[in-house]
Length: 515
Image 1 (cartoon, rainbow, N blue to C red):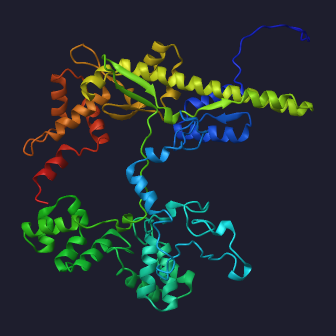
Image 2 (cartoon, rainbow, N blue to C red):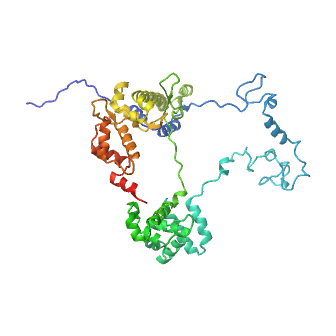
Image 3 (cartoon, one colour):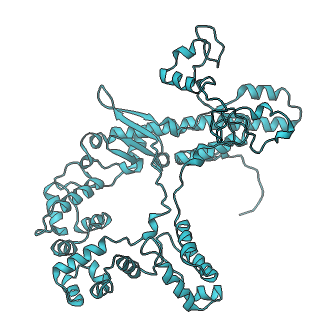
């Protein structure tokens, strides 16, 4: 076969992922926080974008009133229309109601004549800026540097709480330095996990001195702080209560047996009766194993739903997007038209055109994202109507392919839309992924059951089991089979472990133990 060069013309179809298309796909799977940060960055980078904001109303009402008063100014009879309590406050603050300067106490400045850090008395009369209350930096509400939040109390951190005690209880400068170093080594639970020998080498001091300083720090509040393990933490708290006796120390030495509920072995080791052992275990349970968590608590941020669902007055469900999670941006076309007339160079014209296209693309992509989320959420509600009407036991099996086929979209698009998106329902706030569950066949040949509904049924069975009749996995399988659920024993065990439910042997031991 001869090898030669030749020209051929072929026509093919390929999908080209432009940068705009790639970014539009990324917008679909962004959470509301990520989307807000992305839009904020686009507003900073693109001068043709602006945020759509609601017009703020004036305190006295926007626009011109019936009396012809100009905008932003109260009408002549606004004083008469005010609340009587407000008029009383205004009258009490009037100049006529103030006491004379000669009758005022020495620390009162009714005339607002105190200049503070301003010009001295020798500089002549005070300017107008010093003749008004709240001017300058004297704490008035008109002060631009005044911030009401600065007057609010701030929660004390664990480090600040310990440093104050360190300055009061330890006088020696070297011991204070060791104490500050140990405070910085504390984890969020209040434990010292570092090796004290290495600490002594870093500070170039004897290990005995570090050990002695640590024992003094362990007397600080809260009790149990600066412990090196759980046993020491509990022992410090019991010592603070005056309850650390020999029997309690033996119980702390065998915390593993407490976890296993080995009451007979613990009674033999501690030399106490069953009733005394139960009281000792109850006291240990009342202690705080992580005393440092009482400080520096991080406030949990509530989930902001992307979709809000509520019952419709005429029946069915009303679904709408949460406007708080949808950033509203507009393209400033008038600014673009004005600037484009003044552009002279080709590079400036190219930049302006690129920014205009990018702004239009962003507005279009945000609208398309919102429409897609609403379409997917509406189909999920339609598919899971029984769940919203009658509860989790009626959750039906659902996969992404079912929703994608119903709304005419690709399965990957539905997957991106349901990622990090939440819906507020009458039963609570759920992630959209929650409604997609695997199917478990019916033993009677009927409709399949949702895996989430089966897990809920297993949990309900275990919670209602009596102490003298603990259900094994085989018995749970038999009960579910009578209810029309065809499930294997290993699947029941997998669901039980995922729910954090102990085995039947462990549950029987827990319910029969005196501890």
